[in-house]
Amino acid sequence: MKVAKLYRFGDIKIEEIPLPEPSPKEALVRVKACGICSGDVMPWYIEKKAPLVLGHEISGEIVKIGDEIRAKVSLNEGDRVAIHHHAPCMSCFYCRRGDFVQCDTWKKSKIIPGGLSEYIVVPEVNLKNDTLKLPDSVSFEQGALVEPVACVVKSLKRANIKKGDTVLVIGLGVMGQIHIMLAKDFGAQMIIGADMVPFRLDKALEAGADYVVDVSREDIFEKLSDLTDGLMAQAVIVGPGNVDVIANSTKLVSRGGTLLIFTPTPPEQRLCFSVNDIYFNDITITTSYSCGPDDTKEALRFIENGVVNSDLLITHRFPLEKVKEAYEITAMAKNSLKCMILFDN
Image 1 (cartoon, rainbow, N blue to C red):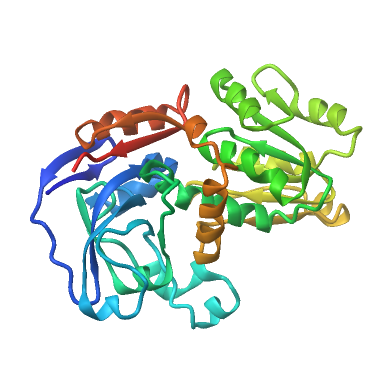
Image 2 (cartoon, rainbow, N blue to C red; image 1 turned 180 degrees about the horizontal axis):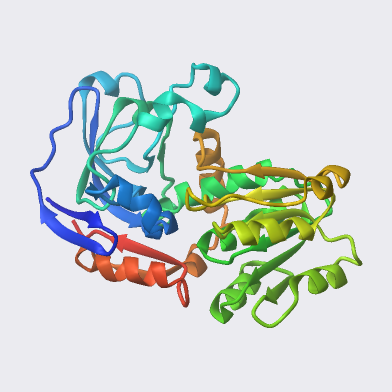
Protein backbone atom coordinates (compact mmCIF):
# COMPACT_ATOMS: atom_id res chain seq x y z
CA MET A 1 0.00 0.00 0.00
CA LYS A 2 1.04 3.62 -0.51
CA VAL A 3 1.90 6.01 2.34
CA ALA A 4 3.17 9.59 2.60
CA LYS A 5 6.27 9.64 4.81
CA LEU A 6 8.00 12.73 6.20
CA TYR A 7 11.78 12.63 6.59
CA ARG A 8 12.29 16.30 7.38
CA PHE A 9 10.24 19.44 6.87
CA GLY A 10 9.44 19.71 3.17
CA ASP A 11 10.82 16.24 2.41
CA ILE A 12 7.78 14.01 1.93
CA LYS A 13 8.00 10.81 -0.08
CA ILE A 14 5.31 8.47 -1.38
CA GLU A 15 6.41 4.94 -0.50
CA GLU A 16 5.10 1.40 -0.78
CA ILE A 17 4.91 -0.64 2.42
CA PRO A 18 3.25 -4.01 3.18
CA LEU A 19 -0.44 -4.03 3.98
CA PRO A 20 -0.70 -4.39 7.78
CA GLU A 21 -2.56 -7.32 9.32
CA PRO A 22 -4.76 -6.41 12.31
CA SER A 23 -4.66 -8.49 15.47
CA PRO A 24 -7.86 -9.93 16.99
CA LYS A 25 -8.11 -6.70 19.03
CA GLU A 26 -7.67 -4.33 16.08
CA ALA A 27 -9.41 -3.25 12.89
CA LEU A 28 -8.15 -2.59 9.38
CA VAL A 29 -9.62 0.59 7.88
CA ARG A 30 -9.49 1.71 4.26
CA VAL A 31 -8.76 5.44 4.45
CA LYS A 32 -11.06 7.56 2.29
CA ALA A 33 -10.15 11.10 3.37
CA CYS A 34 -7.45 12.71 5.49
CA GLY A 35 -7.08 16.41 6.23
CA ILE A 36 -3.78 18.28 6.39
CA CYS A 37 -3.33 19.70 9.89
CA SER A 38 -1.80 23.15 10.29
CA GLY A 39 0.23 21.74 13.18
CA ASP A 40 2.03 19.49 10.71
CA VAL A 41 3.50 22.53 8.94
CA MET A 42 5.22 23.84 12.08
CA PRO A 43 8.83 22.64 11.51
CA TRP A 44 9.83 22.69 15.19
CA TYR A 45 6.81 20.53 16.06
CA ILE A 46 6.79 17.95 13.29
CA GLU A 47 10.48 17.40 12.52
CA LYS A 48 11.21 15.93 15.97
CA LYS A 49 8.77 13.11 15.10
CA ALA A 50 10.38 12.26 11.75
CA PRO A 51 10.56 9.90 10.05
CA LEU A 52 6.83 9.26 10.24
CA VAL A 53 3.76 8.63 8.12
CA LEU A 54 1.79 11.86 8.31
CA GLY A 55 -1.91 12.44 8.84
CA HIS A 56 -4.38 12.17 11.70
CA GLU A 57 -7.66 13.78 10.52
CA ILE A 58 -9.11 10.53 9.23
CA SER A 59 -12.28 8.97 7.90
CA GLY A 60 -12.64 5.63 6.19
CA GLU A 61 -14.34 2.27 5.92
CA ILE A 62 -13.75 -0.76 8.13
CA VAL A 63 -12.64 -3.69 5.96
CA LYS A 64 -11.67 -6.14 8.70
CA ILE A 65 -12.30 -6.24 12.43
CA GLY A 66 -10.77 -8.65 14.92
CA ASP A 67 -13.00 -11.17 16.67
CA GLU A 68 -12.03 -10.04 20.18
CA ILE A 69 -12.75 -6.34 19.63
CA ARG A 70 -15.89 -7.06 17.60
CA ALA A 71 -17.58 -8.34 20.76
CA LYS A 72 -16.76 -5.11 22.64
CA VAL A 73 -17.86 -2.45 20.14
CA SER A 74 -20.81 -1.72 17.87
CA LEU A 75 -18.63 -1.73 14.77
CA ASN A 76 -18.57 -4.05 11.77
CA GLU A 77 -17.00 -4.46 8.35
CA GLY A 78 -18.42 -1.91 5.95
CA ASP A 79 -19.04 0.75 8.59
CA ARG A 80 -18.08 4.29 7.61
CA VAL A 81 -16.16 5.84 10.48
CA ALA A 82 -14.26 8.86 11.76
CA ILE A 83 -11.25 7.84 13.84
CA HIS A 84 -9.46 9.91 16.44
CA HIS A 85 -5.78 9.02 16.46
CA HIS A 86 -5.63 9.38 20.25
CA ALA A 87 -8.02 7.74 22.70
CA PRO A 88 -8.15 7.76 26.52
CA CYS A 89 -8.49 4.83 28.90
CA MET A 90 -11.67 6.35 30.46
CA SER A 91 -10.73 5.16 33.96
CA CYS A 92 -7.58 6.97 35.18
CA PHE A 93 -7.41 10.05 37.42
CA TYR A 94 -7.39 12.42 34.45
CA CYS A 95 -10.21 10.68 32.61
CA ARG A 96 -12.40 10.73 35.72
CA ARG A 97 -11.93 14.51 35.79
CA GLY A 98 -12.75 14.81 32.09
CA ASP A 99 -9.16 15.82 31.23
CA PHE A 100 -8.94 13.15 28.55
CA VAL A 101 -5.95 14.57 26.69
CA GLN A 102 -3.84 14.32 29.86
CA CYS A 103 -4.45 10.56 30.11
CA ASP A 104 -1.24 8.55 29.67
CA THR A 105 -3.06 6.11 27.39
CA TRP A 106 -4.34 9.00 25.26
CA LYS A 107 -0.82 10.37 24.85
CA LYS A 108 0.65 6.98 23.87
CA SER A 109 -2.18 5.81 21.60
CA LYS A 110 -1.94 6.14 17.83
CA ILE A 111 -3.13 4.69 14.55
CA ILE A 112 -0.73 2.63 12.44
CA PRO A 113 1.11 3.76 10.38
CA GLY A 114 -0.59 7.18 9.97
CA GLY A 115 -3.58 8.72 8.24
CA LEU A 116 -1.90 9.48 4.92
CA SER A 117 -1.93 5.81 4.06
CA GLU A 118 -4.26 3.72 1.94
CA TYR A 119 -5.00 1.51 4.95
CA ILE A 120 -4.53 1.91 8.69
CA VAL A 121 -4.70 -0.39 11.69
CA VAL A 122 -6.82 1.01 14.51
CA PRO A 123 -5.98 -0.29 18.02
CA GLU A 124 -8.50 -1.52 20.57
CA VAL A 125 -8.51 1.61 22.74
CA ASN A 126 -9.26 3.86 19.76
CA LEU A 127 -12.03 1.57 18.54
CA LYS A 128 -13.63 1.39 21.98
CA ASN A 129 -13.29 4.98 23.08
CA ASP A 130 -13.10 7.35 20.10
CA THR A 131 -14.20 5.87 16.79
CA LEU A 132 -17.53 7.20 15.51
CA LYS A 133 -19.88 5.77 12.91
CA LEU A 134 -20.69 8.35 10.26
CA PRO A 135 -24.38 8.98 9.53
CA ASP A 136 -25.38 8.42 5.91
CA SER A 137 -25.77 12.17 5.47
CA VAL A 138 -22.11 12.84 6.41
CA SER A 139 -19.55 12.37 3.63
CA PHE A 140 -16.04 11.02 4.11
CA GLU A 141 -14.70 14.54 3.58
CA GLN A 142 -16.93 15.82 6.36
CA GLY A 143 -15.94 12.86 8.52
CA ALA A 144 -12.30 13.88 8.23
CA LEU A 145 -13.28 17.23 9.79
CA VAL A 146 -14.47 15.63 13.04
CA GLU A 147 -11.08 15.91 14.76
CA PRO A 148 -10.39 19.59 13.94
CA VAL A 149 -13.98 20.56 14.74
CA ALA A 150 -13.70 18.69 18.04
CA CYS A 151 -10.59 20.69 18.93
CA VAL A 152 -12.64 23.86 18.49
CA VAL A 153 -15.54 22.44 20.52
CA LYS A 154 -13.16 21.92 23.43
CA SER A 155 -11.66 25.38 22.95
CA LEU A 156 -15.02 27.12 23.07
CA LYS A 157 -16.00 25.19 26.19
CA ARG A 158 -12.82 26.35 27.91
CA ALA A 159 -13.26 29.96 26.75
CA ASN A 160 -16.05 30.41 29.33
CA ILE A 161 -18.38 32.21 26.93
CA LYS A 162 -21.60 33.51 28.46
CA LYS A 163 -24.78 34.41 26.62
CA GLY A 164 -24.44 37.82 25.02
CA ASP A 165 -20.63 37.89 25.03
CA THR A 166 -18.37 39.27 22.33
CA VAL A 167 -15.86 36.75 20.98
CA LEU A 168 -12.73 37.84 19.12
CA VAL A 169 -10.99 35.21 16.99
CA ILE A 170 -7.41 36.11 16.04
CA GLY A 171 -6.08 34.11 13.10
CA LEU A 172 -8.57 33.04 10.45
CA GLY A 173 -7.13 29.84 9.09
CA VAL A 174 -9.36 26.79 9.09
CA MET A 175 -9.44 26.54 12.90
CA GLY A 176 -10.31 30.22 13.24
CA GLN A 177 -13.12 29.77 10.72
CA ILE A 178 -14.52 26.84 12.71
CA HIS A 179 -14.43 28.95 15.89
CA ILE A 180 -16.50 31.57 14.06
CA MET A 181 -19.00 28.97 12.81
CA LEU A 182 -19.59 27.55 16.29
CA ALA A 183 -19.22 30.53 18.66
CA LYS A 184 -22.88 31.54 18.63
CA ASP A 185 -23.90 28.01 19.59
CA PHE A 186 -21.81 28.56 22.73
CA GLY A 187 -23.50 31.86 23.61
CA ALA A 188 -21.67 34.56 21.65
CA GLN A 189 -23.72 37.54 20.50
CA MET A 190 -21.02 39.32 18.49
CA ILE A 191 -18.20 37.52 16.67
CA ILE A 192 -15.20 39.42 15.36
CA GLY A 193 -12.41 37.91 13.28
CA ALA A 194 -8.91 39.32 12.84
CA ASP A 195 -6.29 38.47 10.23
CA MET A 196 -4.22 40.15 7.51
CA VAL A 197 -5.10 37.92 4.54
CA PRO A 198 -8.03 39.29 2.47
CA PHE A 199 -9.13 35.79 1.38
CA ARG A 200 -9.46 34.66 4.98
CA LEU A 201 -11.18 37.86 6.10
CA ASP A 202 -13.79 37.38 3.37
CA LYS A 203 -14.26 33.72 4.33
CA ALA A 204 -14.79 34.71 7.97
CA LEU A 205 -17.73 36.91 6.98
CA GLU A 206 -19.16 33.97 5.03
CA ALA A 207 -18.61 31.74 8.07
CA GLY A 208 -20.68 34.01 10.29
CA ALA A 209 -18.43 36.75 11.66
CA ASP A 210 -20.29 39.99 12.36
CA TYR A 211 -17.16 42.06 11.74
CA VAL A 212 -13.59 41.47 10.61
CA VAL A 213 -10.43 43.46 11.28
CA ASP A 214 -7.58 43.63 8.77
CA VAL A 215 -4.68 43.97 11.20
CA SER A 216 -2.34 45.01 8.39
CA ARG A 217 -4.36 48.22 7.92
CA GLU A 218 -6.40 48.76 11.09
CA ASP A 219 -5.56 49.19 14.77
CA ILE A 220 -7.24 46.18 16.33
CA PHE A 221 -7.45 47.78 19.80
CA GLU A 222 -9.22 50.87 18.47
CA LYS A 223 -11.53 48.87 16.19
CA LEU A 224 -12.52 46.45 18.95
CA SER A 225 -13.09 49.31 21.38
CA ASP A 226 -15.34 51.08 18.87
CA LEU A 227 -17.35 47.93 18.15
CA THR A 228 -17.89 47.12 21.83
CA ASP A 229 -18.32 50.63 23.27
CA GLY A 230 -15.04 50.19 25.10
CA LEU A 231 -15.93 46.88 26.75
CA MET A 232 -13.56 44.83 24.53
CA ALA A 233 -14.08 41.06 24.08
CA GLN A 234 -15.18 38.69 26.83
CA ALA A 235 -13.40 35.83 25.06
CA VAL A 236 -10.31 36.22 22.89
CA ILE A 237 -9.18 33.12 20.97
CA VAL A 238 -5.54 33.43 19.87
CA GLY A 239 -4.69 31.19 16.93
CA PRO A 240 -1.12 32.18 16.04
CA GLY A 241 1.55 30.39 18.08
CA ASN A 242 3.50 33.59 18.67
CA VAL A 243 4.26 35.03 22.10
CA ASP A 244 4.10 38.64 20.93
CA VAL A 245 0.61 38.12 19.53
CA ILE A 246 -0.46 36.35 22.73
CA ALA A 247 0.97 39.08 25.00
CA ASN A 248 -0.59 41.90 22.98
CA SER A 249 -3.92 40.08 22.99
CA THR A 250 -4.19 40.50 26.77
CA LYS A 251 -5.08 44.16 26.04
CA LEU A 252 -8.08 43.05 23.99
CA VAL A 253 -9.79 41.11 26.78
CA SER A 254 -12.56 42.73 28.80
CA ARG A 255 -12.51 42.86 32.57
CA GLY A 256 -13.53 39.41 33.79
CA GLY A 257 -12.89 37.92 30.36
CA THR A 258 -10.86 34.98 29.08
CA LEU A 259 -7.82 34.77 26.81
CA LEU A 260 -7.51 31.32 25.25
CA ILE A 261 -4.22 30.17 23.71
CA PHE A 262 -5.11 27.72 20.94
CA THR A 263 -1.69 26.96 19.45
CA PRO A 264 1.69 26.14 21.03
CA THR A 265 4.73 28.33 20.45
CA PRO A 266 8.26 27.22 19.58
CA PRO A 267 9.68 25.75 22.81
CA GLU A 268 12.32 28.43 23.33
CA GLN A 269 9.77 31.27 23.40
CA ARG A 270 8.64 32.76 26.72
CA LEU A 271 5.55 34.85 27.39
CA CYS A 272 5.92 38.26 29.05
CA PHE A 273 3.00 40.40 30.22
CA SER A 274 1.93 42.58 33.15
CA VAL A 275 0.71 40.36 35.96
CA ASN A 276 -1.07 43.32 37.55
CA ASP A 277 -3.07 44.01 34.39
CA ILE A 278 -4.24 40.39 34.45
CA TYR A 279 -4.77 40.32 38.20
CA PHE A 280 -6.71 43.55 38.75
CA ASN A 281 -8.90 42.98 35.70
CA ASP A 282 -9.70 39.38 36.70
CA ILE A 283 -8.61 38.08 33.31
CA THR A 284 -8.36 34.31 32.91
CA ILE A 285 -5.60 32.96 30.68
CA THR A 286 -6.17 29.38 29.60
CA THR A 287 -5.25 26.96 26.83
CA SER A 288 -6.94 24.28 24.78
CA TYR A 289 -4.96 21.32 23.47
CA SER A 290 -6.55 18.75 21.15
CA CYS A 291 -9.84 17.07 22.13
CA GLY A 292 -11.44 14.11 23.86
CA PRO A 293 -14.26 11.68 23.02
CA ASP A 294 -16.93 14.02 24.40
CA ASP A 295 -15.75 16.68 21.97
CA THR A 296 -15.66 14.40 18.91
CA LYS A 297 -19.25 13.30 19.49
CA GLU A 298 -20.37 16.91 19.74
CA ALA A 299 -18.32 17.81 16.67
CA LEU A 300 -20.02 15.13 14.59
CA ARG A 301 -23.42 16.51 15.63
CA PHE A 302 -22.40 20.01 14.52
CA ILE A 303 -21.25 18.61 11.17
CA GLU A 304 -24.37 16.48 10.70
CA ASN A 305 -26.66 19.41 11.56
CA GLY A 306 -24.98 21.73 9.07
CA VAL A 307 -23.54 24.17 11.60
CA VAL A 308 -20.11 23.41 10.14
CA ASN A 309 -19.95 24.50 6.50
CA SER A 310 -17.56 21.95 5.01
CA ASP A 311 -17.86 23.50 1.54
CA LEU A 312 -16.37 26.73 2.89
CA LEU A 313 -13.65 25.00 4.89
CA ILE A 314 -12.33 22.54 2.29
CA THR A 315 -10.68 24.71 -0.33
CA HIS A 316 -8.32 22.20 -1.94
CA ARG A 317 -8.51 18.48 -2.71
CA PHE A 318 -5.61 16.27 -3.78
CA PRO A 319 -4.79 12.61 -4.40
CA LEU A 320 -2.11 11.08 -2.19
CA GLU A 321 0.48 11.48 -4.95
CA LYS A 322 0.18 15.28 -4.65
CA VAL A 323 0.47 15.43 -0.87
CA LYS A 324 3.63 17.57 -1.02
CA GLU A 325 1.73 20.25 -2.92
CA ALA A 326 -1.03 20.10 -0.31
CA TYR A 327 1.49 20.69 2.48
CA GLU A 328 3.10 23.57 0.60
CA ILE A 329 -0.26 25.30 0.16
CA THR A 330 -1.12 24.73 3.82
CA ALA A 331 2.24 26.14 4.93
CA MET A 332 1.83 29.30 2.80
CA ALA A 333 -1.35 30.13 4.77
CA LYS A 334 -2.73 32.48 2.13
CA ASN A 335 -5.62 31.67 -0.20
CA SER A 336 -6.48 28.33 1.36
CA LEU A 337 -8.15 26.81 4.39
CA LYS A 338 -8.35 23.01 4.63
CA CYS A 339 -6.44 20.86 2.15
CA MET A 340 -7.95 17.38 1.95
CA ILE A 341 -6.30 14.22 0.64
CA LEU A 342 -8.85 11.92 -1.00
CA PHE A 343 -8.30 8.22 -1.66
CA ASP A 344 -9.84 6.40 -4.61
CA ASN A 345 -9.15 2.92 -3.27
